[in-house]
Image 1 (cartoon, helix red, strand yellow):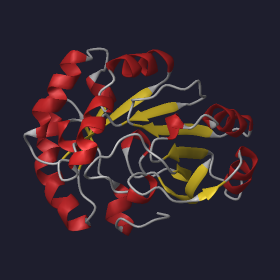
Image 2 (image 1 turned 135 degrees about the vertical axis):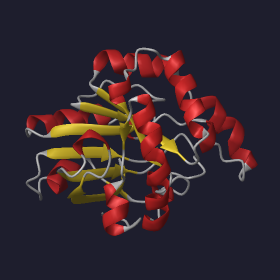
Image 3 (image 1 turned 180 degrees about the horizontal axis):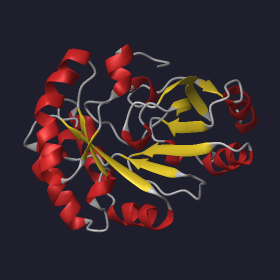
Image 4 (image 1 turned 45 degrees about the vertical axis):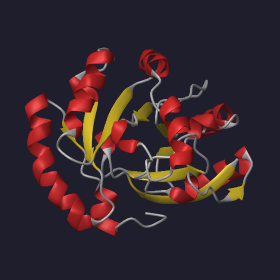
Length: 226
């Protein structure tokens, strides 16, 4: 598996915000979101080839019971079922961060799904637009994940009008409950994040959604290994 980085930090988003966690970032993605904040695991994947045993050994360097497998898109790796089974045998609580476009028979305590909506399309890179649009919306995959795992949904919000797209998505996939939904500002600078949180908070409250603060950006900025 191509691994971009393995590190310990706090979970910055969703229901386990603030939880000490080990992060395993796999490198490679089937989408090309224009706002991707980890291009080294997506647009230009880089990293080190590691076996499942090597990844588990590296994760064991930290005591944190929570392990977050992220990317890129971790669900596209054929070795992921083996990795999740090995981590579970070690008693780890597993969160998998995914866009919800690929299915794999994995073990997970939480599927943290970030559906890529219309605001993700890489219009500035025309050669990727068609492939991205064909892949980003997979209701069949989302419904299968909902039936199989505990799920949370994080929607990236760039501007207030993005909420209409989110509401349309939730109307289409009505199995998603409001209490499973987090609205997350599109920002990689702390000052921009703070600005967007001001107008995003009332939007979340109006619709009964959670607000995702992106604590890692507030604490560290958009840096690797944080």
